[in-house]
Each structure stands twice: as structure tokens, then as C-alpha cells.
Length: 287
Image: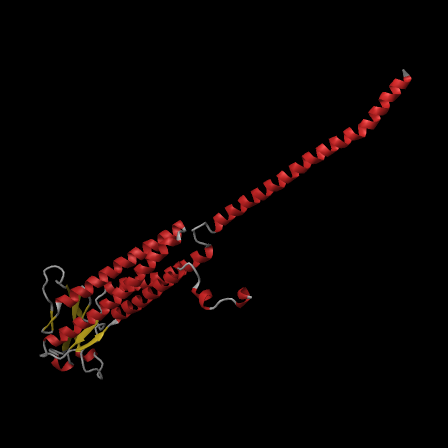
């Protein structure tokens, strides 16, 4: 009996380490698989976190903070052009017309200035005019002023200034181009506002087209207006007139230039690549 018990205990002791080793191996295997799974889960979470961070900084198909800053800077240039355009189009100091001082009556002489929509005449004292100046004026001198709106767009009548008749077709064309230019400015501003608020660079492309066209149209308006002034002067040679373009034209010309610059900047920002890197490739990247 003792021999049988001893034999069973000996077999149990022999089998014990194997069983314990198997259990340890099983536990180690379990922890190993769990470690691998935990490592994969960590990588997956890190990938999700990176994706969410990228979505917060630059969405797929969205714009980055740096690109948004560049768009805002270009938009500031366009806004300055818009303000100057509104100031120039809304005022009537596009051209000044002044007869010689020798035609003065009662020590006063008339000077006229007009824009796209109305004309103004002003009676100034000859004594207040610069002695070296041969004509009356300038128009910003103090005096009684009388302003009337043109009837080009209502009844189609021409205006008469110093016995000279305006050319309504050229005047209408100049005014319509200015209105179309203002409309394109508004459309471009709406596109850029949507691009910044929605962080969608797609709207930058139509904005570049709108601002470029607005700059071209406003400059064409100035050119046609100057042709209308020349047509006015050539309509009657009875009274010689001195004419000069005034500060409203300067505002509109600067506005057209700024709008063209803004449109070109928006076009560059809308490109899928950087023109600077395309023209000047990085030598370190090539190596």
C-alpha cells in the first residue's frame, strides 16, 4: 500500500511541473495576445486621434489657417478697392470745366464739375482765383453751387454745359459699366465671406473672377468717360473750355488697380500648387 501511494505521489510530482509550465505558457500566451491586441488598439486610437486633429486644422478639401490668413490679407486689398470705387462712383468730381477768366461777368465766373450721375455749376469770385491761372476755378473754391441730375437713364435727354452738349450714349455706357463693376464687387465679397466662414477654398476661384472683372470694368468706365468728355468739348467750339480730370477719377483708377491685384492674388491662392515653389524648386528636396 505504501509503495502504491508513493508511486502515485511520485507521478503527481513529475506531472506537476508540466502542468504548471503549460498553465504559465497559456497565461503568457494570453497576455501576449492581449498585449498585441492592446498595441493594435493603441495604434488605432492614435490614428483616429491624428485624423481628428488633422480635421480640426485642415479638413480634407478644406483650408488651413495659413491659407485663411492669406485670403484675409488679399480680401483687405480688395475691400480698399471697393471703398475707393464707391467713393469715386458716388461723387461728381470726375472732371472740371472752366471757361477763361476774360469771359467773367460782374466779377464772377462759372466753373462746372460733373460725374456719372449729376453735374454742378458754381459761381466764384474772379478776385479769389489764382492770378497765374488763366481759367476760372478750381471747383473746390467757395461759392454758390447748383447741382442737377442727368436725365440719361430716365428721359434720355442730353445735358448742356457752357453751350456744349453731352454724348448720352457714351455717358450711359460709362455709368452702366460702373454699375456692373459694383455688382461684381459685391459678388466677389460674398464669395470670399462664404469661403472664410465655411472654410471652403472653392469659393476663392469665383471671387478671383469677380474682382478681376470688376477692376477691368471700372477702368473701362473711366476710359469711356474720358471719351465722353472729349465728345462734349468737340460738340461746340464757341466757348473755349479748360478741362481736367478730378480726384474722383483718381479714386476710381486706384480702385480698379487694387481690384485687379486682389483678383490676381485670389487666383494664385486658388491654385492647387504654389507658383513660387514651381518656379523656384527646393534644391534640398531634389537631392
